Amino acid sequence: MVPLSKGKNDKIGNKPWPEKKPILASSEMLLTRDAAKRPKWDQSAIQERQEEMAKLALEAWPREP
Image (cartoon, rainbow, N blue to C red):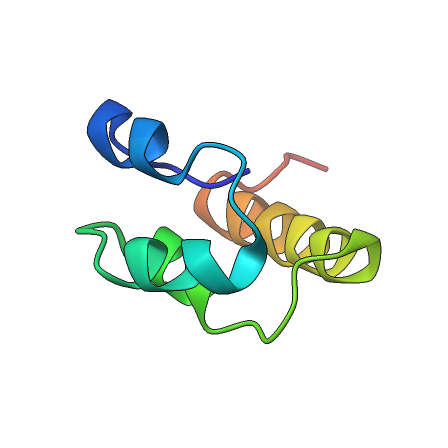
């Protein structure tokens, strides 16, 4: 999952990853453009991104000990 405007989301629909990448790469949102840099979008890539996003969230909103 990536942040995406409704218009772009409607445009990509259920297209295969290679067709989605250029649309994601043109996003105004850095996190979405970053996702487009991945060569594939499979279970492994999604898990890796999820871990990266969790790390970013903890940096932005640290948990108290």
